[in-house]
Amino acid sequence: MKKVAFYTLGCKLNYSETSTIGRMFQERGFEKVEFTDKPDIYVINTCSVTDNADKKCRKIVKEAQKHSPDAFITIVGCYAQLKPKEISEIPGVDAVLGAAEKFQLVDILDGFVKQDKPQVLASAISEANTFHNSYSFGDRTRTFLKVQDGCDYSCSFCTIPLARGNSRSDTIENVVRSANEIAESGVKEIVLTGVNTGDFGLQEGKRVETFYQLVQELDKVEGINRFRISSIEPNLLSNDIIEFVANSNKFMPHFHIPLQSGSNKILKLMRRRYLRELYADRVSTIKSLMPHCCIGVDVIVGFPGETEEDFLETYNFINGLDVSYLHVFPYSERENTLAPDMPGKVSIKDRNRRADMLRILSEKKKRHFYEQNIGKEFHVLFEDDVKDGLMEGFTENYVRVVAKYDPVLVNETKHVRLTGINKESLMEAEEAYAEVLKH
Image (tube, rainbow, N blue to C red; front, side):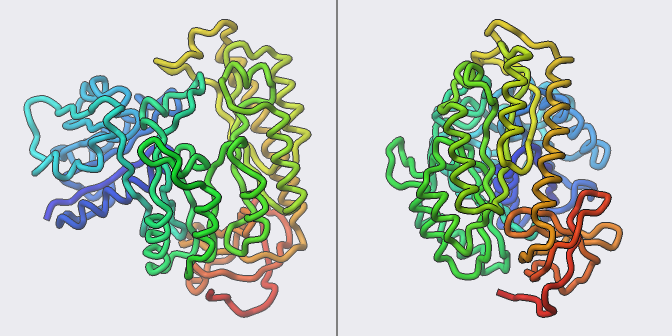
């Protein structure tokens, strides 16, 4: 029995796909092992969002060779689609598979026999037109369930459409079936993932179903206590969806909504499909219906043309929003996108300085959000990661709670009262009543 190990870079979507590819190997009789367990095969799933994809890929390949010098090393994922030849030249790489090939890799690389030259199997992205059902399993308490792939938007900074192809989705029937399978495994929380999750419903280029219809059907699934929406564009987050989440016992009061800039001038240069006024309206609507809701924000700083005044406009806009945390990215140039050729390049030093300012603001926002929840009662779903005798879990509204490790609590929901924030900026809690809820 050959042993296979996996390493995943990037987003929740990549994790769901790696897990699914792992199950394909196991169904064929391979043994899934840890990275350091001297596997016969490595599968490295790559990301292209940040500018150090090449550096990370090289480092992981090098580490793989240390642990298992003779292993067959396969690279898949977004970076593999964008730069297959470049990756094939990394010492130690045996095969590079593109977006259309990665779910067939067990068949394509039959036997995983090393050849004189690396195999490069990456079709044009137009060939990646099939939706492949994926979800993570057995890796953690919550499961990432892929419902959508690809993107039809053409933001001027983004390579994802080039790496994953056009927007396409699973059917509601299939997603519900997957959710039921996940429920039968004992998992309590599902995170819905996609490249452009709110665009769910496109099949063979035609709008067949909608994301709103999907959440309505998932809400009926027995055995799953919690659903979260991983990320959704503000222009696709309708009042219907917000109101449904506000009235649902299963969809958690937690949204992650990309903003990217608080300057309308920069949003237009980025070719985003909304202006800051719409974003502010979405936040206001959410908070009016769910005052305790957690709202996360993606922001890019140092985009070409962003002056100091534009950045301060973004800073002040976010500072005035009732949001809970930020994911901050200094702009990084991407080949085959429009942005690198735009005038007004911002220095790396200024990009990093602006990012640091927003990260400090994020800590303040998160602290304020946590403080607003002290003294209130929630249900915490505890996870199985244990460190220094402590375990962690999340409330419905995504407050991270720490507690003394108790094996009985793993993957269980406990009713607690939030009592205060510790020096690691985690929330502490006490039992609101003794019984552990086993929904």
